[in-house]
Image (cartoon, rainbow, N blue to C red; front, side):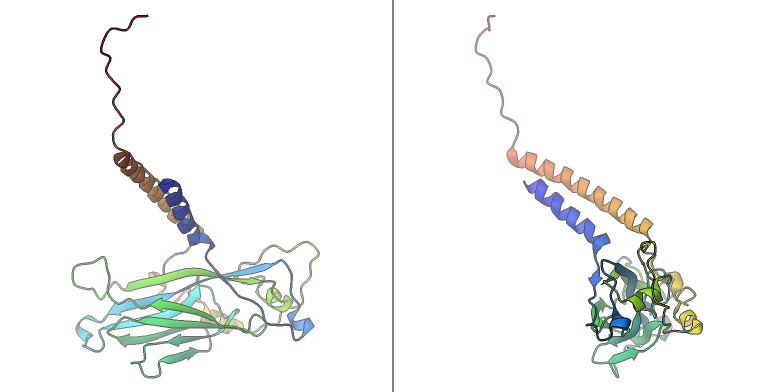
Length: 270
């Protein structure tokens, strides 16, 4: 029973790697033409949020030892401005103006400091998507955990989280606007299904501005591809198997050695 429970627990933890996501509800319909929903359809937007921190080395002081950047980006470094209207970053109260609002992509801000703390990240969506914000939290990490030597100025400390925002029953306008956008996963629509002409909320120049493919920090971004997820699942499966073997050994020790058979006292005749 112990092994069975452990297997279920590990399988659940492994599944969280791939099925974790935020479901975002849509606003109430105020204009049937603008917000008419497409039933039984889900739009998925993979996002990555995190921080990159550089040690300042000789330029470091007691109050400013690191320069760091917090951001929200597309999982494939595509522009998220087609979905996200603005992002609010809530910093530690010790910062001047700790509530920072970024109205356009790329959704990021940079600061200098010496301490680690939790950053609040609130995502606000366009009017035809959702009227509720999505609140995320990320812990700013300045110091590496796997290095015992002196911290280097060349290799930053990168901490990122991957997740997916799922929009069930999207409005026709929203679906038409993102159906060919590289940052958005849209299911194949049935033959003969027609969408209204999309109403653009961004120009080409703005889209290029929000694209993080050529971002100066992009070389440090983590890769969240399907292949990586499969590798994580394979590694998790190996860990499960190793724990199963270990638990079996522990159970065999707890049960003790098998009982010895009683030795015969005489000859057996057939």
